[in-house]
Image 1 (cartoon, rainbow over the protein chains, first blue to last red):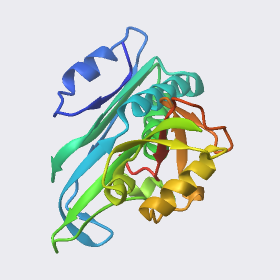
Image 2: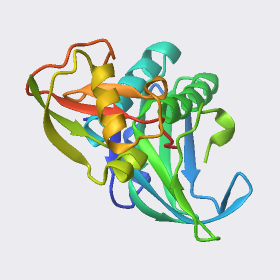
Image 3: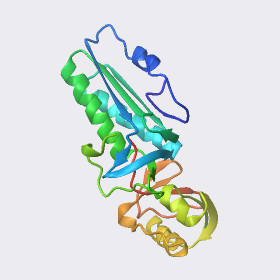
Length: 146
Length: 80
């Protein structure tokens, strides 16, 4: 079963958490990225995510595989939304289970940063002033995290 | 000449007015192919800010243009 998925509809996080349960796991960490009502000082009304799905799922899978090796965690998975999202909607979910909390926290943080930097997904924001546009950042930094 | 399908996403799709196009090209490599598309559609992003993929896998700009390939120009990503 693939660890990374692009979802074009809202998704339930309970089954994602459940699939990371493991008898050897003593820790689980999750990250949720939500749609916020502003970006760089501009009020945002809503947004749309678009992905190159085939490549996004392959690259996401690669990131999660790398995380398993790099942090020695037991398992990890992630789902990223595409389509129209409203303020407060869940945009991305990442979870990692590990024997101990340090690895779970570290892997979770690393995965979301890599997803933001590498996976072909684009955000189109609609602003309160009527403008709208695609975000093509020069460099993705953790402070951009949703 | 190679017959290829180009995929456009996000701002590139908006500028091209289409999510894909099929065309014949004599471009020697993927970088030159983007240059052709950029001048045809007026893309603002220079090649240095993009990545490129062929048939669903990341590729290198200096790779040759293969007949029948599906080529995607990947603008800077903004997921998360």
